Length: 115
Image (cartoon, rainbow, N blue to C red; front, side, top):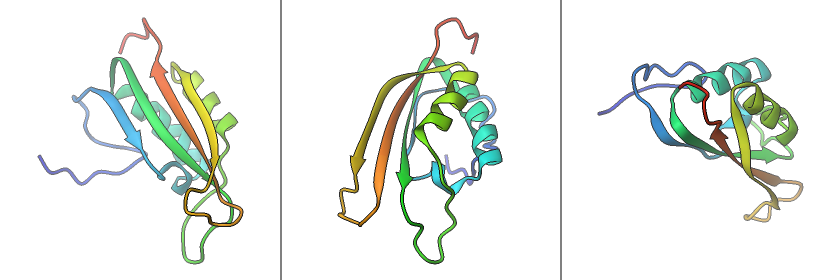
């Protein structure tokens, strides 16, 4: 199945996933979009499902649309949506770009959340 879809809305209304992976995506959404996207992602998870995502920190390359995002903000959005943190790590950029670092979060749908 080929689907052209985008955060924060996503139209896969009846599908449920055990794992949703967002690699270098979250910082391309503004604060309002991130809030809506977290609710939508949580709604797409099967019971016990997980969201794994990376957050880029550092200077924005010329011509790119990126917004500052913190792990704390993302964890709070997740918590309000019924997810809890199962992994939290921060690393310097693997490509050696000056001033760039990454946060990696593993989030899991809380038991009994009724999804």
